[in-house]
Structures are given as structure tokens and as C-alpha cells.
Image 1 (tube, rainbow, N blue to C red):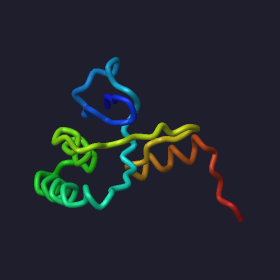
Image 2 (image 1 turned 30 degrees about the vertical axis):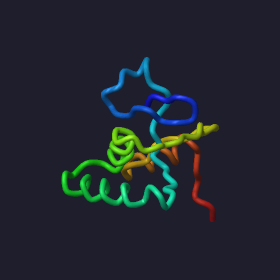
Image 3 (image 1 turned 180 degrees about the horizontal axis):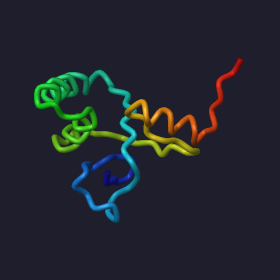
Length: 97
């Protein structure tokens, strides 16, 4: 994603990494005024079999304000069971008795 101030101004996999700021974690809070646009794009992405992150990309493209926060500390993306298993290994999560 590309940012200006505290807003996302461009997003997508097409952006060169040297022109990008951070990784898109896609944890969202949607205010009521943006809910209708979000629902329309959610349906469009479902019909076209696009990922959820495409909703945010398209909101930016349509001129909606998207703000971001920088996450601190360690984290990893979990999309699949194998990611979850790897995350448990990375963070040394053990089962408690």
C-alpha cells in the first residue's frame, strides 16, 4: 500500500515494494457511512471470486478514506492451517495441560 499522512492512497499487488509502505493485514473497522459501499464491493468480490483484501483496494480506488495503523511487535499472516502450524512454531506456542 502507499500512504499519505494517515490514509491509504493506493493499494494492490501491482505496487513495487520500494514504493510501498508495509503489509496489508486487512483488519478492518467500518464506520456506518462506509457500510453501504463496503457491502456492494463485498458482493462484487464474492461474485467475481476475489479475495477480501480486494474490497479495501477497490474502496481506495473509488476515493473512500481508509486509514491505517502501524502494528508493533511480532506477527505473522495466517490464511491456511499450514500457516497456523507455522505460527505456533514461530511463537513457540505449546499446549497447556
